[in-house]
Length: 224
Image (cartoon, rainbow, N blue to C red; front, top):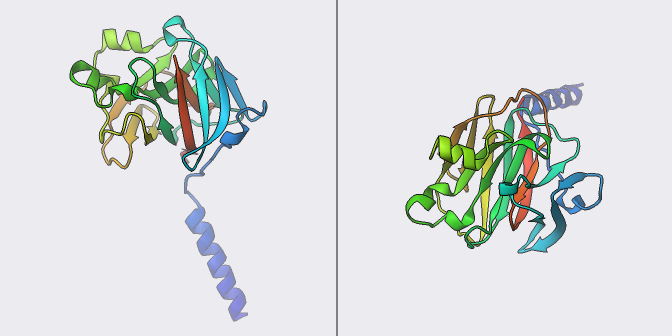
């Protein structure tokens, strides 16, 4: 009876510890080409093993300037508010590296996203402030936001990663705001007010534009 009581106590305690914690969802990147786990639009995808990581390489088929952006969306995923974490690797070639995550995805033309321009990580002058970007398609493209509200929806990143190396990003999606953290930073590199209607559990995934990018250790945690 004594042992039974201890067992019940431990069970209750473990249940209490787990209750209220965010559920961590880790989509299998290796299944990106299986035709069922992911939906890839306007891009080609391949699973790769690179530098000790199970990763995905996405290559865009078009250019967002022409209304075409590459997406790889996790089928059946839902996020209303919560946190997205990922490792990314671009390249330090101007206008040839745009990669990030998409969320609140309605379809390939209607979504919110945060993406990075690694070639601007160590840039000088005005380009330094264009390292990370928030968009809300189709109404709020980067061109429109830069023209109407310069410096509000894009920013430098801190700390500054290697433009040709892997870096970590954490995107916190709230009801009204999005915050973007790089590496282990305690302060966000970018904080913006959301420009699209949320409030519904919608899919999340990966984004690529113009060229290609590498993605690893992708996971998301819907908020309770």
